[in-house]
Structures are given as structure tokens and as C-alpha cells.
Image (tube, rainbow, N blue to C red; front, side):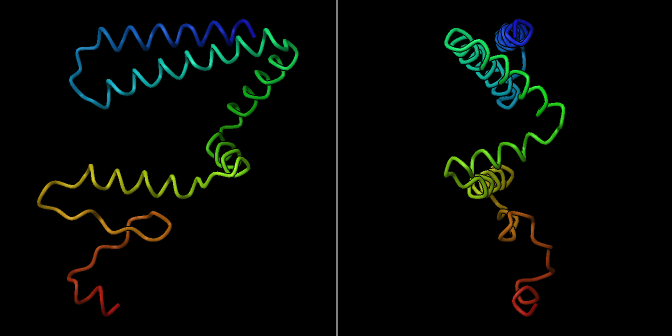
Length: 133
């Protein structure tokens, strides 16, 4: 657990330093540094509190999390956890896709059509062709 805590603190410091020192004017880059720093700090504080409350449980959670990260399927784990908690991760995905489509649309363009699964619909030559199949 000490190595995990150390890594979280290093990430917090690195991200907040990059946030302040980065000369990027890109809102995406700034948001990424801010998000990474905040998330690492939150994880550190939660882990620290858990360690004080129940050191064995904290160690088990760190081990399980490392195994999940090594597995590489954190998206699936997060989806399952959200569903188990009573949330609708598919709706979140649709909201994200809608927001992204709006951000990628210039004022004179319409957003790309998407299927009910949130995938881009195939482009058609004209609205008449789209209506006729």
C-alpha cells in the first residue's frame, strides 16, 4: 500500500505542476491535467482513510485494483459496477456521444447521425435516399 499511496501523491504533484507550468492554451490539455491531479488526490485521500479504518481491507483493495488494472478491462469493471449500483452507463455513453458530436460540429454543420447504440450512422447521399432505405 505505501507504493500505491506514493504513486498517487506523485501523480497529484506532477499533474498540478503541469497544470500551472504548462503553456498550453488547449482547454482539453488543461482539463486533463486538472482531472488527473484531482482524481489522484481523491484516490489518495480515500485510500488513506480506508487504511486508517481497516489496514487489511485497504491492502486487499489495492491488490484487487492492481489485478483489475493489469487485466486491462477497467471499462468493463466500471460498467458492471455502475450497473450494480443502479446507474445506467449506456445512458452516460449516449450523453457523452451527443456532447462530443455537438463539440465537433461547426456552426454551419449538423451533428453526425448516430445509431441507437451510439455509433455513427452510415453517411447517405441525400435525405431522400436516407428515407427510402
